[in-house]
Image (cartoon, rainbow, N blue to C red; front, side, top):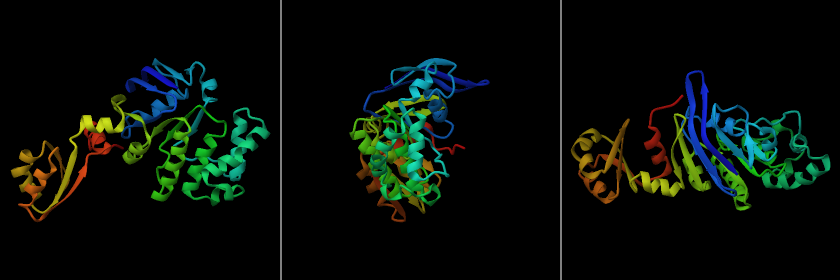
Length: 301
C-alpha cells in the first residue's frame, strides 16, 4: 500500500528528511514515531503529495506521488493532528459535505452516514452542532469522516493527543475494529503504549532518518535489557557510585532517578536492601525505553 525509497527533503541548507525507506503492507497498521523535529510531519506531507521531495520515490495505493497525488488522495483517509471540522454544520452535515469532496453523489454519502455515526458512537448526536461535542467526540467524528469514501489506507496523525484516558480507549476500540476489518493504517503517535497496543510494525525517526524498524516486541527484545529498575530517594548518589556498575548491565541517571537496565532484577533489588531509604519500581522494559535509548532524553521543542 505504501512504498518509499530514498526520500529526501531540504529547506534551504537544512535536510529535514534524509533518505527514508518505508514499506507498508496491505492490511497492516504501521507506526511512525519520533520526537518533535524528527521529520514526521514533513514525511507525512511528502507521502500525501502535499509537498514535493528533492529526491526519492513514493508509491501510495499503487499510484506514483507527487506525480499523481490527487488520484492517490482519493484512495486515502486522513485524520489530522488538529480537528478541522466545519463548525457551521451539524455532525451529520459534516459527513455529508465531506463525502461530496470525493465525488460521491448525495444518496451514496447518505447511505454511509448511519453506519459511520454508529462506528463513532455518535448516532444520538447526529443533529448536534460541533461546538456541543466534547474533545473525544470531535476526534471520533474526524475519524468517521476520514472513512466516508471507504479509503484503502488511513493516515492518522496523533489521533488521541489531548484526550482523557476514557476517550483514548474509545478511539483505540475504533481503530482495532478497522485493523480487524483489514484496513491499512499509518499512525503517528507520541504515546508508546498506543503504539505497542495497535501497530504491527513501526519505524522510529530522528533527525530525518529511520533509526530502527520492526515489530514492537522484537524492537524491545533487540535493543533493551528485559527488566528495568527505577530507583529514587535519599542516598541515591552514593548507592549509584557503589553498586550501579556492579548490578546493572546499563544505567542512566536522569534528574533524581536512576534507570537500571538488567536481565537479573533480583540482583539489583538485593543490592537495594542495603539502602532502605531508597525506593524503587521494578517493571519490564517497554517501547518507551527503546525510544529514549535511540533518540535521547533531552527535551525537544
